Image (tube, rainbow, N blue to C red; front, side, top):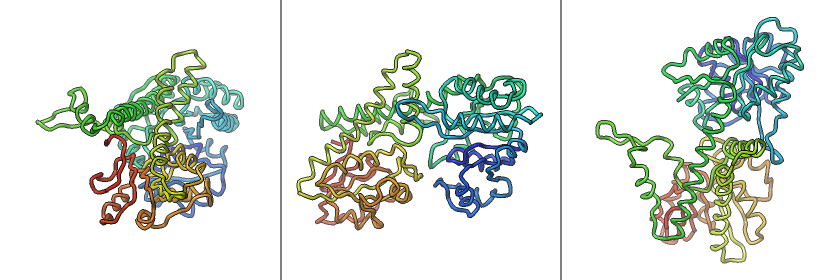
Length: 443
């Protein structure tokens, strides 16, 4: 099929290039000419493992980028909206959605054929059938259900694993307004084999995405809260707590006398909190919606509150261990998780902002891929390491904020006079390797 995508950000690029793998032709709308120029020069617009390979394979063959919205709509049968939906100033922002829907409406004005609009962006339940529908109808003069169809098709892409998540999905959710729309959207996924496809109305599809992310965020905050209780009690091994819980037959599955643990168990590991472009934003947005419709939001609020407290706990640990007038602190990991250069809502960025207020601390940072994004925020107010092992040896405190495997090399440089304090909220390193080591859940 011929597919157009509005938005050439993380979701738009991954979705577009992965659709090409299934034989579709994709045109991606991007208003930023520099992005298109960089893409055509084979520059990485975003860091995602495997994306560069797909770019070389499909760019200007099956995947094209354009600034001409009217042309891409007229030349395609279906359009995906993949624009940002930020949570700004205490509320869910619709400015990018409205702009995309307006462009779509103006472009559909003269189109005779039925066109399907599919929302990939994470949006509040009801937004597809209200905000997007009204905007398209207003600027096109056409009617939803008659002249164009509306579908909500949420993405479940984990940064760092996005290519595999798209090509081998665990489920496909399709919201739709009528059977004609559903049949067209289903055609796109006909080559996806052995994948459960859930079809429902648009509101339900929208809530599925929010519920999925909020559940995972809840597990992280719950784990951190229990771990903190264990740290206060003392002499608690949280690894054994987690193992004892995971062995429950309602969690672990035994096949041929071998135990299998679901991936969701990994969200029960304590750490310095969740970040990224989805979990914080989506929990806040759902809490905001609950306030608007006067529904209870106690659990959602507690998820966010517990998450924020993890950074406070880290600062408290650092302050307790800064005895000198000037302390050198190395922060390892800036991306909110390994496998990406995304620093949005990253716990590391929050930690740096808090530490910069303390005069007795000099901050140095390192990340394999997220340094450039970090420089855009902090410029020269912090130092940027090019050799994290050398920086580790001269630092008073090293804080491991992202679980990059490369940081395990620190274990190999430990010698008898190694006196650096390792603060490891991600529990990446072997604690018995160090004289001075602090981690969440290990007391």
